[in-house]
Image 1 (cartoon, rainbow, N blue to C red):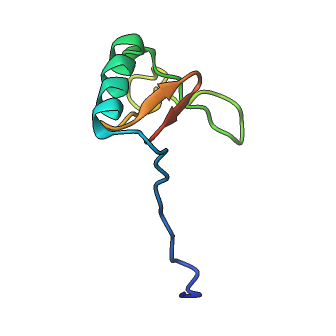
Image 2 (image 1 turned 180 degrees about the horizontal axis):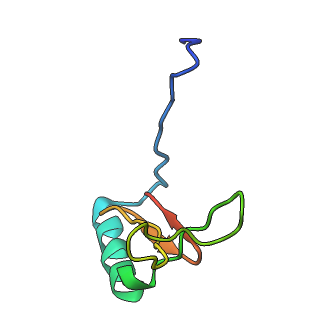
Length: 78
């Protein structure tokens, strides 16, 4: 295995018996329960303050990709 400091190993763990259909159903359900406008706010970890848009000044929300779930205050991928 490489010892290069810029190498990132990415893997996906899949529980036995899960299917892509189940994931699609969970994602669809999550979209209905947590709309994009209700996603958690981005918080600057250094200051603890919410990150604001540079032009409008409104607080920014965490982004969710097409395959991400919003669970509580976290946005997680599959």
